[in-house]
Length: 452
Image (cartoon, rainbow, N blue to C red):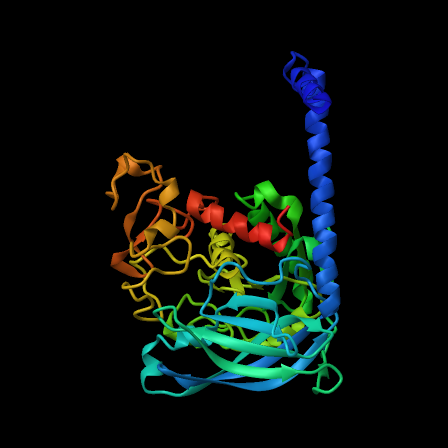
């Protein structure tokens, strides 16, 4: 009875007309939430410290094969001095990418770490060349450095999204051979640093096609590029969660190679236009070199800033993105390509030429958040479509500013649908991510920065 009377008295106090009382309650709730999240973070970080050191284990390998074959062979393990990733969100929850890597304890088989990723090799497999040619591409994954024996496995999804293990290797600290990182003598520059790497989305910009004489230009270009990125929604709303650093990786010559124009440049990272025969596809096959340079700083994501005024770019999920520094659409390009490499977003256009063919099987639902084949649309953005909006949605001005289901996306005019009439993942427009893309980007930001 005494508890009931006290509770009723407390309820009357809450609902009484007093803004001071409500403010006190809200302040108390905020303190409780902060304390709860701080305690949760401490517990989860303790889990990290049980299994991992605060440094990186890098595993370099090679992909070998053709359009329908693949083999992965180990090249080397490398110890790097920084771990830029989260200390709490260690296992992947997004199921994005053509591959994923798993790290399991050898004694208990407990899953300790996992990440999805994609590769340039997997894109090459969809090119005409791969039909009658066998090639080899460098690949690499980075992991928190294990304290105890682990099994590292790489899985590959087929076009029906069925995974199969294509590589496995045991790593035993103190027994398995590990090389020390070869640290090039390039300066690391803080563009904007808002916190510790484990609680930030750490973006690393690498210089490509900049000589030592281009240093000041690179600094200006980096500052401008960072402004484009954090100035656009939803990065703008979460800019305090983002840190950006740059590495001045000097090239012997200014500019970048353009094989279709007979231009070949001795650049630091080997980036080139005409990747897979596409004039605007701007990539490098030397991923091990990219990792060598990136090892100088903590990072979650890599952007390669190319000293060029020619339109182009590229972005592969948890691989890297490329952006030309001086094209008038550089603001759009950094958002579009980072949408690929960071959030695993799909291209929403279908009229432009691309290097690969038959990229999606329309009999299954794509795993990217911003396209659908309507096979399992309930898992996508159905909750954002108003009841009065028809599905599929006509591409008319009437529906130009609503979430719908518009046909034409993922390089296919028919059978694949996008959520908005126009979006930064479809057209050359800056700061125009649609609500579906914004939601996907924000979820990834929360994952990298601890979720609170």
